Length: 220
Image (cartoon, rainbow, N blue to C red; front, side, top):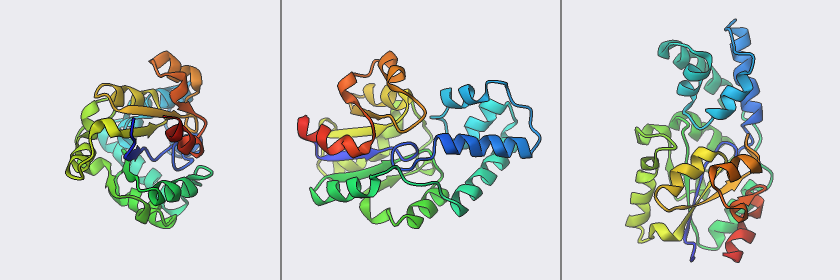
């Protein structure tokens, strides 16, 4: 295939926010005195693809208003103390841009929080298009989550067959696969190789981190 565009997930792919983000959520729950399941980390891992407030509502069994307030506090912490980037992220984004690839970002973060973190790391100029939770009502694994990004790619004259998506959850793989977007699964999130293989991902499309992405593109 001729790759012309790369769509990146954010958490767990570009920013190292999954394991540490989970611990932040648990710390907030403990501070609030909330009752948590004994296997809360498993619950969070299985539902990590959800938008933040929905994730908290589902895993901690809270009403939507309380879950929203919880997530607001979580976002405030993330904005004031951003977690580190995945090693090599900036170099890869710079390299892909220099080679002429269109670089898109698709995330379930709210735009206000997302832009504050992107600005903190000076990442905004690397992206040709940024899609946040505010832009669409669907969430992964619903493949319609890709619609705004694919519409923009179409306007740029790029076919879906010339686009790859980089995610870190089986839900990312499922969403992309349903509309025949080649999905590359990065192991910098909460899921290991066996999780992706069980979901049907091909071993050759599983990479340690986005640092391996240029090599994957060259090989395909």
